[in-house]
Amino acid sequence: MAAPISNPLALEEQVCFALSVAARSVVSVYKPVLAPMGLTHPQYLVMLALWGAEPVSVKQLAGMLQLDPATLSPLLKRLEALDLVVRRRDTNDERSLAVSLTPKGRALREQALKVPPAIVERLGMSIDELQALHGTLTQVIAAAQHALESQD
Image (cartoon, rainbow, N blue to C red; front, side, top):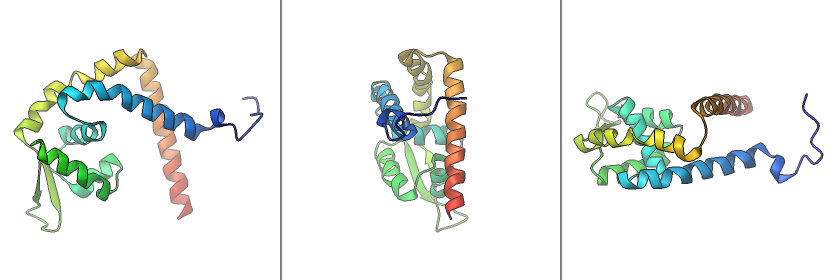
């Protein structure tokens, strides 16, 4: 059993603080790795989702990325300006926009294959440590989503 925290309001004891700093720090590690590809970290996440499955509706993509569609829209506009994606009205549902990769967007996947090993090397952590961290963070996400759903 863990020892009680002497000061429950100490900044360094807060899970939210550790997660926030960790997220900013890891995204900063990605920045120079993604720069040669011309992508920001949020754009890279969109591309990862599309490399996994496309075409997808904007609504589906927002769900995959756990982003609000209003947050996703400017990312898609920028990726479209870079000629990496195209948005078209869904032929089955005119109200829905379908997002697909362009040939340039598909070709960028080859360059992106170098990103994960570069990040592992820069972080200096083992694959086992990173997989364990991923598992723990996935549990935290699920717990937070459950807590939010319980509030409704």
